[in-house]
Length: 320
Image (tube, rainbow, N blue to C red; front, side, top):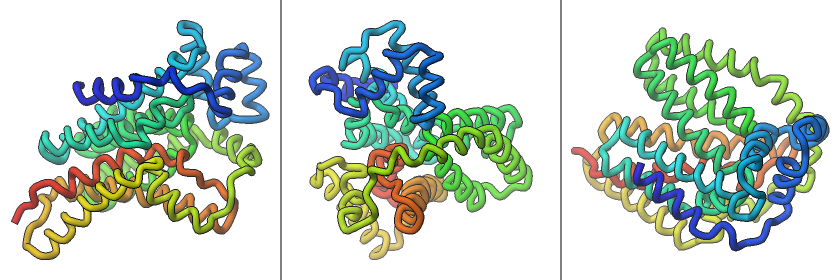
């Protein structure tokens, strides 16, 4: 809870200062300037992918004015929710120290603080990704039908919030298949995922049909390397990127030069985090290279909590 409050405070300490930029103006136009009927008509032609976010913000603006601060406040609160979720996730696998450290990294990660001061859905998608993963781990351990139902509902809602979150499901598949191979877990996970997928199929089809609205995205090139290694998570902060890389690299050297190893639970958390990072990023890059450009760093904000998990977990005191 304390880490979540800290993360929200970091994001909310100055979001009223920068003026709205183009995409934020689209949020105000869709959520504040339109009635629900007008919003629905708009989504039938454009921005269906952000429809749930616009609906949530429409409700928000019935209470709060559309100023810079109040328009961005939900994003700041969502970063707090994401950081709190990272702590909860970490505690299920590792020590309290590792869990809290991961939450603090999430709170100050440049991609998270950037998302927390923008009136767009990326911070909320981060929070959704974290808590969806927490639900997955809980469902796999308890193997209870009601928890699996909760996971399925959360999965469907998360995809409605950010269609790219369907790629997080693939990381969950890796975790289940590697570490939770009991027959009932596999069966319930498969059924839950399939039903959630069927439920959101019309939405995914509608979103894909509006793909021409992101025709401005450039093709994969040399700059993509910088986008993935720096901008995607560290948002013009190379020192933060270098520090994180040094932590992981130093730990790798220790592992290679000694007999130290992570305990099984920490290895599971690290595997889950790496799958969460690599699979969505890799698939979007491949699609952008060979089919149609859809990659831009902020679209992968939902993978940022995994970056917050990797350095503290990999730097945890290894066991002989």
